[in-house]
Image (cartoon, rainbow, N blue to C red; front, side):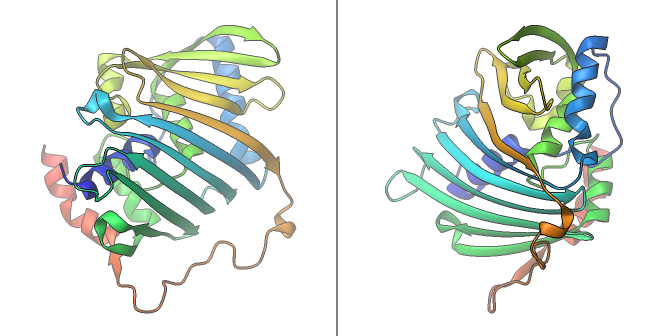
Length: 269
């Protein structure tokens, strides 16, 4: 596997997002109360949060490890700005055996713009995708669309797909465990990597927002940490924060149109 597909796999695995209607799940009543509080973050107004993830892809047959750091500024579900940096080791084909990439993802209300600086794939690249196309793609893929990078929406996908129960309460934190079943494994796609049996959420008891999320099982491929959650006034957000213009001279790939053209094939599989 060459470096470019590996990078796409890492990003899609660690930050896959659901754009479709909620999937039925059967969490315990006490766990469901905490899950509802977590997802209500979207209803509490604009917020900022930082996150970091440790990745281990050995369970997918790749001797790769990496660290992802980023931050999210979210006004609502269709207006966000996400910045992230990914450092990986043991990348096949990379001159030094390591690769670093950076990304900026801006959702402006109708379109998701992604600017990636990836030395392993020729430098800077820009893609765009209409939100409407991503929603259709999510429906065609059973609820999972690996084309956006909102880690909070990733959590929402997990809460709607797996059955959770409360397994601990201590020190101002609540720990939930969600199990992956044969049915939910198909729906979760790459999130349900080989060796992963479920996910653990550690929630702040005051806010209901996670401080840590980790895959559980024989090979837990990802552990995420969230910190510095802050709710802000909409008026305090800088003008133009959720707008994007591609750098001069950088070609733009219409990812939405490309995915739409491939949907009939995906639906027939």
